[in-house]
Structures are given as structure tokens and as C-alpha cells.
Picture: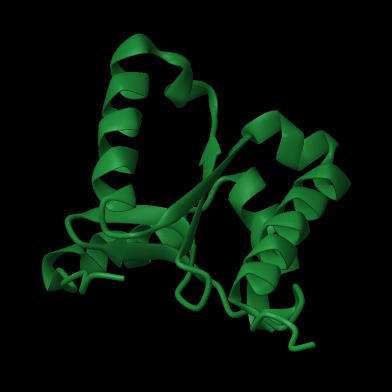
Length: 130
């Protein structure tokens, strides 16, 4: 993974976003905080480069984004795609979930994250010796 500089100019806005989270962000954070999900630590509203992502796990190089109603507009989708491609260029992986899925199908969302973690763990494990 490349070094992503910490942009101290985003610190206050990141704190603002954490203190004014959407319901979906709060619900998912309740499941991810304190390394509850398979022991992996996540941050919420994490500055990465010149962006702030909804959730980030450094160990997995994983960004999780929640797309609410504001993300369904064409211009926002273009910006989201561009931002995601830039961050993927730094070796980050993305999982995106619809706001409504967090609220209505949390089990599916968590299962998707667990599947990502298990694939990552399997890819990182050494080949068995015969």
C-alpha cells in the first residue's frame, strides 16, 4: 500500500461528520466499533489523502461507503466513482452499501464484510507445504 498523507485540514470536518452521522452510519458503526467484527479495527469518517471515507480498516486496506439518497444523483455518482478510483490507486479496496440495506438487511451487509475478510485472510495465508 502506498502512503496516504494525513490532511490535518480535514480533521475538524471529519469530527463534525462523526458527530452528525446518519442513522445508517450509526447502525453500521455499532457493528464495527471496538474490533467487534472478527477482531478487525475500523475507523469512522477517516481522512485518507484529500478525502474522508465513511469507514476504514487499515489492516485490510478496506474502505466501506454507505450510499444514501444524495448518492443517487448523476453528478454525485460521477464524483464517487472518480474518488473511488483515486483511492483504489493507492491499493485500497471498496465495499459500497445502500443506506436502505444497512437499515433493513444488516445481516446481509455484515455477511458481505465477513466474506471480504475471509477472502483477504485466505489470500494472505501461506501456501500449505506438502
